Image 1 (cartoon, rainbow, N blue to C red):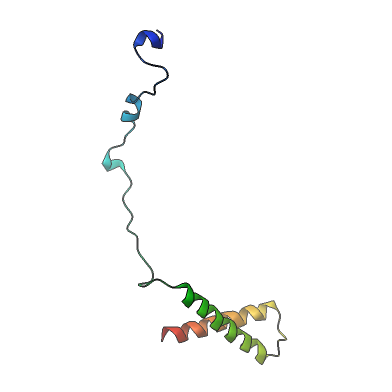
Image 2: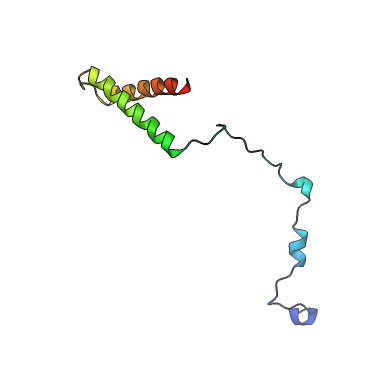
Length: 91
């Protein structure tokens, strides 16, 4: 049987197959509730200021050792400065 004989236009997409693929609402995935970590948004200015404070504190830590450390020491200085600044900012 040809499409011409069946009364179906071969150039026109069939909507019958589209209707049958819809899933019932009960089969849809459950909605996920969005939560926020911080109560107020962190501004770029605050992040930049924090980074400057950490860099300054890390610099002074390295200066105490006469800048004789290696990359591992620099990382340790940064991490300790980061903890120190974060403690200070939480107060």
